[in-house]
Amino acid sequence: MADIIHLLPDSVANQIAAGEVIQRPASVVKELLENALDAGATDISLIIKEAGKTLVQVIDNGKGMSETDARLCFEKHATSKIKTADDLFSLTTMGFRGEALASIAAIAHVEMKTRQSHNELGSSISMEGSTLISQHSCQFQTGTSIAVKNLFYNVPARRNFLKSNIAELRHIIDEFQRVALVSPDVAYTFYNNGQILFQLKSSNLKQRIVGLFGSHYNERMVPLKQKSEHVNVYGFIGKPEFAKKTRGEQFFFANNRFIKQNYFHHSVMNTFQELIPENALPSYFIYIDVDPKTIDVNIHPTKVEVNFQDKRLIYAVLGSSIKKALAEHNLTPLLDFDTEPGFEFDFPANRPIRPPQITINPDYNPFESKQVEKSSLQREANLPHWEKLYPSFSEYPDQAIQSSNFTSDTKSEVDISIRNVMQSGLKYIVSPVKSGLMIINQQYAHERILFEKYLTQYQIGKKASQQLLFPIQLHFNLSDSEIIKQLLPDLKEIGFELEQFSLQNFVANGTPPEITESQIHPILEQILENYKSSKEFDQDRKVHFAKSMARQLAIKAGQRLKTEEMTQLIDELFACQVPDKSPGGQAILRILDSAELDDKFRND
Image 1 (tube, helix red, strand yellow):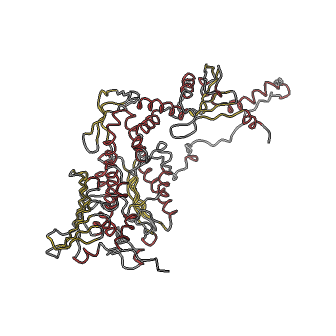
Image 2: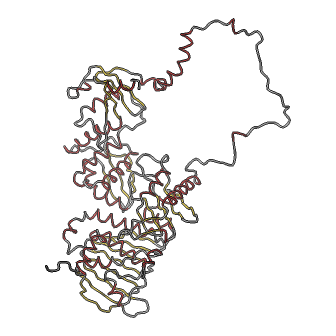
Image 3: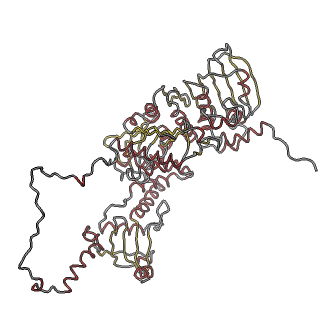
């Protein structure tokens, strides 16, 4: 039988490897920017056209390459970063695998120009699908320029899976921000379709964050610094009052390399747990420096997944450093352990010392007192226990059980003419039904009511907008601004009248009628979060808009309701098409039948 195993050609092998290394235009941006940093560049330009589908070009003033290196860099596993396996445990560069340029050249048209400072002429190379098209000498400044054109031209299936230009540009901005944050001493200019998106000068870390995310971050951040024998943690964290519903401003860097680490994110969230609203995310820019020998970055070609030798130690140091930073800026209560207030007495020095005295009644005879009725004594003794058992009635007298009429032809469980309702824990509505006791989550119930209301309005094209007396300015980071810009026509259909007057700023001239001025930004943030987290957002935007509106405007847990409001809420809930599930899929109500209630009182 003939042999069937054979070696793949380099062009095919590179194209297969490109599937892991180069997933979208943002991957090209990441690899080229990191190469520029490794070359010692102090000024880098990024040029993008059509969200990187047509052109991704990076120009730097680094040390450049010789004629031989310029050709060799497109070969697989050709690198100047490491020489032996031991070098993997002492990495100080961004790249080291030698796969990026070979993978890019396999799926795009690549043009490179480079020159070293001591050479009069540079080298120009053109590659197409791992094939060398031309190589010749050229005039060029010191440094390197790499232009990647027609990405995935020979992999149409991969090109068809690319998202819209807005979505791909957002990923490019994310990668640009990650690289720019690890090199604040490097100047960057970012062009998109001929327009400057970012122009960053060499600066310190705080100025770099402000340059990327806006001047208002100058007052929103708290410095973070904690150094120990094994780990050094520093950076900035956002103040709790500026926590957002949207993701995108949470950054971890290990040895000046962006990483994704859910374990450390848990440490941050655990520290902020009682300082920020539920489902809110604080901003943080946290840098972790450890011995390169204690970290493994050679897990995935993207190098964003890393392993630490002692994750628990870093977790603890991270949490304590955040607590310390917040306490130093009076953002959390700070305990003073130097004093013991329980033992402080103001005792005058000249006051005479007297022994304690007891006053007694010599005429008291316990056998001559009147006998207290046993039943009265028992009632008085039991009274505190009954008050403890029913605290809600004493604290909220207006929450006493009252009757109200309610009828429903479609819901047999609540098909009664007279219903008693009460609120429990300022979170649940409790009402007796035929089979037992019905408990309703008031927030989820109101979300369902509002969701179906808004969705019906959007589907029938019923547009309503209230004009604001004074327009409100809204600020978003650049990535979110691109999303809002894309959604402007859809937002207008539901009543939001927004105008963009700069790259990151919008003006709200009108809103849907039910929305107050303070709710505009939270609702838009909820829409942005749904856009980022849902893959089906583009398929039915009106559903996601209705969910966002309902979630922000619904009655929240902790809000006291009158009997009439609870009755109306139940009436509207059972008029919904899906009264038992919230828009997010949570259960709205539960019925405890008589058997379950009997079990609660049955002896073990």
